[in-house]
Image (cartoon, rainbow, N blue to C red; front, side):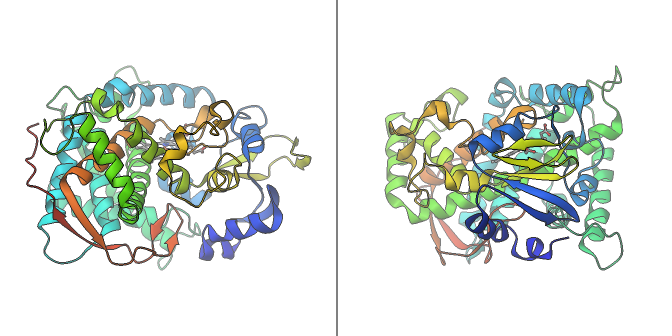
Amino acid sequence: MNFAFLFQGCDFYTERFSRYGYIYKTHLFGSRTIRVIGPDNVKKILLGEPHHVTTTWPKSVRILLGDGALSNKYGETHRVQKRILQQALDHRAIANFVPEIQNVVQECLHEWCDEEGELLGYPCCRDLAFRLAGKVIFGMDFEEAEREKLTTVFKTVVDNMFSLPINCPGFGFHQGLKSRKLIQNQIKELLQTSDKRTTSAAVSVLDVLRNFLDDNTLTEDVIIDECVELLFAGHHSTASSSCSLLLQLFKNPDICEKIRSELNMNEVDEQSKNDLTYDVINNLDYLENVIKEILRMFPPVGGGFRKAKRTFGIGGYEVPQDWTIVYSIRETHKSSPLFPDNDNFRPERWDEPEIDIQGLRFNYLPFGAGTRSCPGEKFAKLSLKVFVIELIRGCKWDIKNPNPNLTLLPAPKPVDLLPISFSRRRSFPLSLV
Ligand code: HEM
């Protein structure tokens, strides 16, 4: 185990990258590891499954996600389960959730504005992301008390995702396992006691998965593990990006103005029709650039884990069989020549001719690529867009410390959790769902 990795988190990687470059050896979680950065190297890894690499997350992640999770599946089983998930989260499925997503976002913003004192931005974003995940995955609103309990329990799982896998009292992993069990039981209860939960055109992921129980394509245990994974993957990453958006938009009022004028031009401004549609949202090109830019600068998933199935060459080096490989999204974005002023939050860059769309593929990959690419991309981007629209047209917000230190594992988050206060720009009605 490399303890520097645990204590310094991803600063450890950044420091190593500046010292050793695009490919270097290290030691992680007791495994000899090669860390890989840069578009060509990353491409070789991401397109290398199942030929010369396979996916293996650290033991703590594997156990906390569960055997049935997509991240722990391989070959044909992975292909079948992934296709089902992609179907449950494709653009048609997600488009039907727009009114529900808008409603949840507006409710959260109203609650934040009603709060008299100071709030903490990161837990607010985590709560929002959890509610959105609850809607899309389970087709339900958790009652407030139930939600608070679940978010607290889930926080313990997330916080111990990358931990020493020692199942003894006093160790974080042990706490994580106990919390996972509670969530597992709750999902089991949902699966067994509820019929179809969804009341609108939107069909929840659970309802889609449930259909595959009848012909034994999926088992109850797999569905439960899959839901735990989706709840984890779906909420901690979106929470991190929403929080990064709060901060960057606060620091860049000119960008907020540009978003506002795009909303005006598309009649999504304060005075006009309240209800959003998938088509209207996808017409907002500048907003698309803002989301792309936040995912470039602060990718919530910093990279992924693989294992060499056989010895192979990469970038002039040899990766020995059975070694762990960590490919980096964060350092690949940071070092890409396509983003020369890469420390600046500049959505305009996405319209400039210097951005070579052909070459972009492996220079910019917040959602990964290849067989393991993220099935939640459309849901995540839609949620972030609705969040920005409602924030910009409905709220003013004030951040006490606009330059917080960040921790980067398991996703970027301000160390001070972002003390913040909100007020209304106008009294914006809740849409009727
Ligand atoms: C901003 C939000 C998100 C980002 C940046 C993101 C990023 C990623 C990345 C980079 C991977 C690939 C990791 C690898 O190569 O091993 C991944 C995988 C995955 N993501 Fe996401 N994700 C996000 C949101 C979501 C959401 C909302 C869901 C579902 C509700 C989701 C579900 C998954 C699942 C199940 C996998 C595993 C795929 C597989 O093993 O084939 N993610 N995500």
